[in-house]
Length: 463
Image (spheres, rainbow, N blue to C red):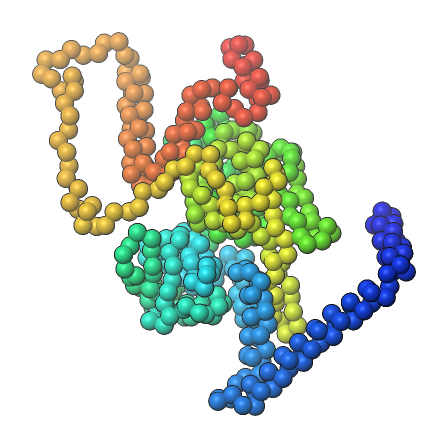
C-alpha cells in the first residue's frame, strides 16, 4: 500500500511541475478538446430529436438509444457490444453451462457472420455445421449488414422450433440450406475417456465447471487404469472450443504446469496489466501430453495451448487456431444491462500475441472432410482378405510361444485394430495417440522433465 501511495504522490508532484511550465498551452488544448466533444454530443441530441419527431414511423426512444450505444461499441472491434438486460441474463446463464439455442459460437468477419465452432453434441453439431462456415441468411432473411447481436437475435427462438440457415462453405460452389431444431444446450465442459493406454480429455468450453470437471474426469480415468504407471500420456482435445472464462483457462493450464508464467494480459494502462503464474502440482506427474487444436479453437483454449506449448509441456497437433487474443470485461450497467468491452490483449509465456495469428501447431495434421454419402456407399465394398502362412493347409504351428504369450499377441492385435478404426473416425486424435505411444516406447528419455528422466533411469538400473 505504501508503494502505491508513494507512486501516486510522485505522479502528482511531477504533474504540478509540468503544469507550472506549460500551463497556458495545455489548458487551451484541453478546453478546445472538451468544446469539440460537447459540440458532437449536441449534434447527437439534435439527430435523436429529429428522428423521434420526423421519422416516417413512430420509434421507441429506448431502442434508439440502445442502438446508438451498441453502434458505438461495435465500431471498436467485433467483440465489444452492449448487452440488453435479456442478453446479460443469457450470458450469465451460459457461463453456468446451460442455455437454449443452436449450439454455435459465432463472430463477424467483414460484416459476415462466421462460425467460430459448433459445440459438441448440440443441434448445430448434429446438423453438420463446421468451424469456418459463413451464415448469410436465417429463415430466408439475409443477415448481411446486420450487427452480430442482431444476427444472433434472428437465430434465437423457442426450444423445439425449426430454423433454416443458409451456409457458405469453402470448397462448396453454391450456398446451401441447413435445417436445425432449436434445443436446450447443456454443455458438459469436460469429457474424459481412455483409448488404449492414453487418457483423452475433451474440453468443449471454459465455464464455471471446466476445471472441477477436468480434475474429476482425470482422477476417474487414472483410477480405472490402475494408476498413472499404466497410462502413457494424456491428449487434451481443445478442437472447436470457442473459449470462455479466462480464470478457467488459467486453472486448466496450471493443472499441468509446476511453475512459470501461464498468461499475461496487457491493457492500455500499466495498471490494467496482469501476469498469472503456475503453482506447484501437476495432475499427471509430468506424463507426456498432446494438445489438439483447429480453426475452431479460440480465446481461452488458445491460452491453454500456448502456455503448454511455450513451456514445452505438450506437443500441439492439428491446424492453426482461430486467433482471438483479446480479453473482454463485462461491466454491469444501470437497468440490469451490461457492456462487453475489450480491455486488454493477452500474451503467451514467451511474450507472443496470438491476435489474428493463432497458435501454430508443432505438427500440422489436417482432419479429412467427411465424404458425401454417395461416395461412401460406392467405396463400401469389402476387399477380399489377404491369405497368410497360417491359412495354408498343413502349415507348421508356432511352438515358440506359450498360451499366455499368444493371448498377449491377440490382445495387442485387437488394440491395433481398434486404433485403425479410430483412425477412420478421428484421424487427428489417432495421430495424437500414436505420438504418445511413440514417446512411451522411447522410455525415460521422452519424459519432459529432466529430473523425472534421471529418476526413471536410476529405477531402471536398480531393477
